[in-house]
Each structure stands twice: as C-alpha cells, then as structure tokens.
Image: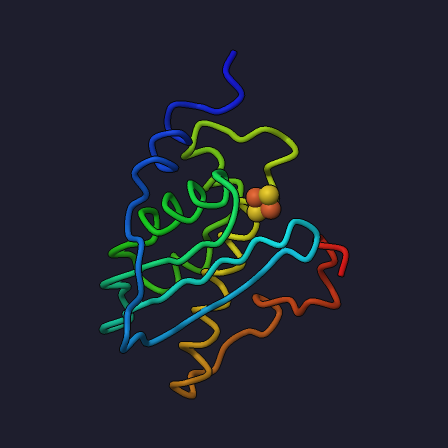
Length: 143
Ligand code: FES
C-alpha cells in the first residue's frame, strides 16, 4: 500500500484555500519545534459563521495536505462547530496519514483553534479557556 493516500497527494499537489486574508477576523499561527514546520490560518467570520478561510504553511507535504483539508472542513461552518474540529477528523478526511505524520494534522487543529481564539480575543467574546490549552499543558512538540 502506498504511504500516502490519493487524497493526501491530491491536497498536497492542489492545495485548497492557500493564501492570506488581509482583513482577517482571526489569525492563528502555530509551529512544531521538533520538525520546524509552521502553519498560519486566516479566518473571515460573519454572523458567527466562517465565510472565508485561507492558510499559509511552511512545512512538509502532510502539513500542507492537512491545512488544505482542515480549511475545507470548516468553510461555511459556525464558529462553535469549527472549534470541535479534531486532528482525527482531518486525518480521517484525508483517508489516513502515516503514524509519524499524525502530528502534521495536530498542527492544523491547533492553527484553527489559535485563529478562533484570536477572533474571540479581538472581539471581546467570552469563552471557555479550557478549549484552548496553552503550550505548557500540551508538550506534543517537546519544546
Ligand atoms: Fe512536522 Fe509535517 S513534519 S508538520
């Protein structure tokens, strides 16, 4: 069996929603200290719905495919639903990732959460802080 699914290869070769939103309502940037990959997500939010999402990823093919798939999964969704996006859902939508590449999908989940947190913070919206664990309580990237 090929290491990467057709979907991973498709999203790597033809990534969806690449770019920048200049007047974004929320921006999230995360990195993995171990592999050095960086992911940035831009969100446009109108009436509590994600009306546009773009990403910039400096990273491996799996990180690019994960970002691309994650943006497709949250496009048009309410903020509350986007918040529930897990790396598992991203991986499943990609028909799987090799075990040593699962952290690439974690980066996509974290970047979206960081952008949503930025949106909440910028707009003074109250939220449950446990939905956004800080770095100290995560440790997946072994900083
Ligand atoms: Fe680190 Fe892919 S190798 S995000």
